[in-house]
Image (cartoon, rainbow, N blue to C red; front, side):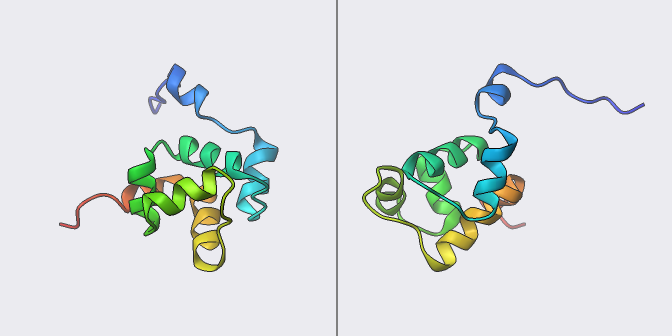
Length: 96
């Protein structure tokens, strides 16, 4: 039998409802809170999430504060983050 780790309180706090995550996976980001929720779900700070996506922290802050909207490749990367958060976190790992 494989040991499955218990969810921590932090895991539960950063989780997304299934319908919310499916909407984000489809690229339907309605406001900046959706992007902030996704970043929290992935489990990264603004600086690390921006680095993993290849955007500036100011750009990410603009999205999260509803001053700007992600488009093109950035929107595609956000959809990937919603589908595969592990890939986004792995993008920060040093290449051996």
